[in-house]
Length: 115
Image (cartoon, helix red, strand yellow):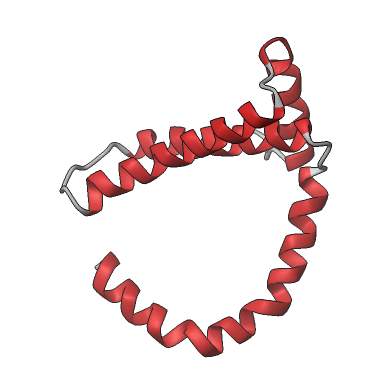
């Protein structure tokens, strides 16, 4: 197994790799939406149409989403590592309230939908 990849390193590597073909900002946002659509298509095919995509297909599409998010962050000057750390702190404060309000319903939904 290779060393863990932190978000700052990921963002730097994506910026370096894509520098010759970096999207303009709007293109980066649209590429992110397109890749998220690919993830949704795989989930739709599995959950609604009974297809069984290979786990590596979903993994590849999820990785595409992360790469596109890193590119978009770079194009707008966002430190993705710092933004995610701040978001995790925010979630730490908010999740207990969500768990109280939504936890039982989500537990039932997971039981029905995830089997």
